[in-house]
Image (cartoon, rainbow, N blue to C red):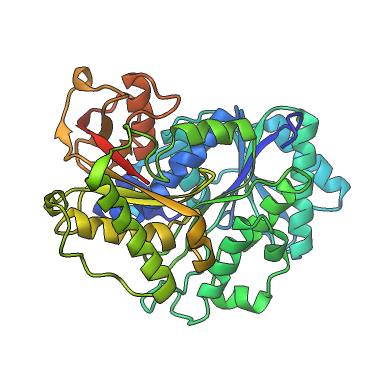
Length: 466
């Protein structure tokens, strides 16, 4: 994007309170990938140098004819409505930027109503919780949308962008909102058999950087989906308008019948590249020398046969009978798919094995890498001749002290003492050359605050490549 622009990031974040470990407790395992994706989103905001974050929420107080802004000088929110009153968020308001937004909106005949004496709603508090727990600290503007037209929501986003450029400081914008609430029979808003088309349209529009499709979406489909994030996204699209588009879906899941999306609409490229060097959510990097010989050929051949059979025939292969004894071990692994040019095309893995042996683990993860990696569309049959495969086989994690870690040799798992939050980082990542940096990133991914007592484990990873 244009380096002179003060808008350094725009994205979308979900807001189910169950994501907050103090609220969700054991249930956070169901939304672990969303939690990890919020760590990635925050890392990009931090790397971009954002001094202020603007959050717009569907659960702020509503006015039919005006957008809402919480007034300060300080914002406060807690999760007392969700049985965790001691879990709080606080931030100072960026009053200069808020006043600029109000003035420019008025010039475009859009009202911004400032409200006092309100604690933050959970649609604002949940994203802010993850921003602050993952290492971002700055000023905040908290907004709510209105019942004015869809076009006016996009125009309001344009006004916000103009205000950001006028003030001239690096600013990030987050659209808080969940997608369809009607994806399963026991979903909170009931079940609608076509609701999933809403989520699929939003996700695909972002993956293809065609966000105009969201603006022009069938409004009847939107209503049937029972969503709560559409108007927030419209404002975000207006904010992002005029910048170079580098959209990316960081994660999508719907474990409780509600769609949770973490996505980037626009970002400072340096921030995205810096984050990509450190992040491991999309799978392992080069962690060891390629292993030669029959075992390497057998491992990569199994990954290839699995994917090609599933993509072309839709069937899961049976475990071959003539595999080397090494395949009998029960261990986690990552399967990576790349183009011949070296571009990542899919990667999924398991640290803790879920199958009876390595062969079944490879088959399971190979199919997932080809069809379920949320960062990419499923692999198509016409792509198969242009793909190559690698498998990282992981050793069992073992307890470790900081003195026993080595950022090049060992991957690390950081876990809070209650066992509710866990972050993982693979070894030998670009830009992660010290144990301190490795632990800081792994803790941030887990949402573990600095100086919190943690348990450490280490593991090795061996890569087998075609």
